[in-house]
Image (cartoon, rainbow, N blue to C red; front, side, top):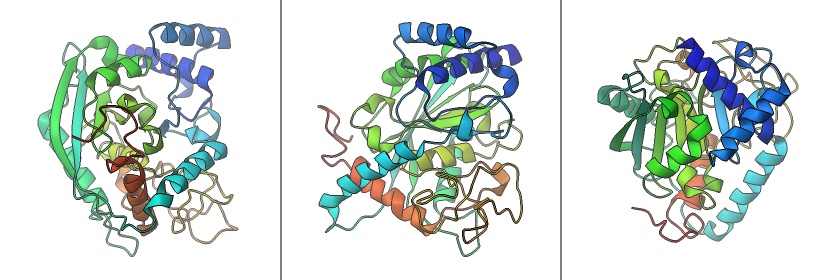
Length: 342
């Protein structure tokens, strides 16, 4: 098992060396020894027809503070984040006179990719528990404090697909373009979630809504199979990796985006945060020149699942804006032939 995970992480790192973008998720012991080795593996992956790193991919890590990780913990660069913000503002301009609200329901298709021996074959019960976790998180039912927010988003399970493939299961990142192009269902309004073995350091990753029109089949969320409710990923087994990644799918950045520098994560009611949180720290304040303690309990942080309880009203508004701009079936989201919502 560990050998499989190390090979998967080595391949993942190889792609990242080439793309230099925002995805990371490795522990130090899984890094390849030399840059030439990484370059060769990445070239091999490209021969399979897979690009080393899709645009704007955003990840959740279990141990962002370990040495050997990509700098900045894997978040988007300020330039990338600013470009996404620009695209959002441009898409919202024609909608100024409209009432922007979240949809009543988001259809969800879960693609369970597992080993041929049954490893990672997530049960239907666990999939349904994950959907319920999403509904509780986005309905504001995990927090009773002043920041408890019902975002208005609700999720309905439409289908579960199952694929037994040892290579896809253990080396998802190497073949992610092929996998998603073959399995993806629906239009911009359909949430596709893929489960596989992502290795010991990477919990999940997601695309952003701004990229749907250019690459619709690659739209969706990928999570480690053992992070779903009932899994055996210590500290991350309550289903909030999916909660976190769906937040990216709906347009949110990490709470630590841009660190202590303006504009932060582009949400006015999430306090600035210099770097991602780990564990469940209390009273953490990494941006003392800014008001408020770090948003350790926010779903868009890296805290343990047990600490994650909150979306803010500003985040709810931002997700609704992204939905209206890119996922509501309008012309901005549907620029390719045949991409109409089902």
